[in-house]
Length: 192
Image (cartoon, rainbow, N blue to C red; front, side, top):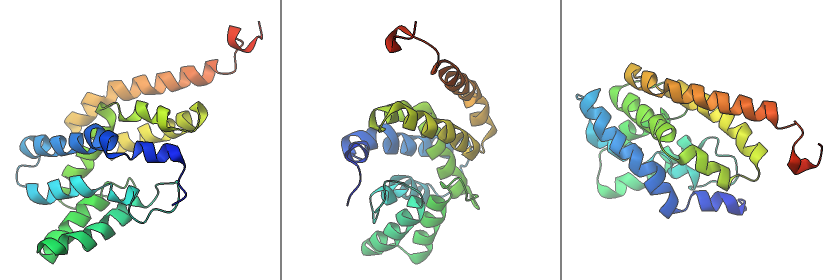
């Protein structure tokens, strides 16, 4: 497929499921009870399980842009094999597509999945581990700077926004401190 080796490590099932998908599914169950009890839990769980399938399904570039659409395409390929209705499948796809930061949720299931996905990124080791999978630290810092903002902006549940705001502010301070200090003299670059 031509993807850099480090991307394969990130998508390995022994890393990806326990550190993102499993957490997102737990969030879906929790947020269903707390915030969206009238939403269809089955639709939300299917969407949570398959929302990142497009990170590997028909992916030809290292850039993950558009993976939500590929995830929906995979759902439309896979779920009919299990006799699920077209309405159910369409609802799963709507929820998956809402995880794209450029797409707005349109129903309770899509709000539920979008928040569960974003929250799982913010509360797990997911972001920091990406530094290991990145080509270099500058690539990671650039990605991290953009990703914390886009992920934070995906949250729509006020309680979650309030909970993670101090964390986001801390991330911003870390990035600012890194950028401020990265060009300063140090014993490591023999510039003293």
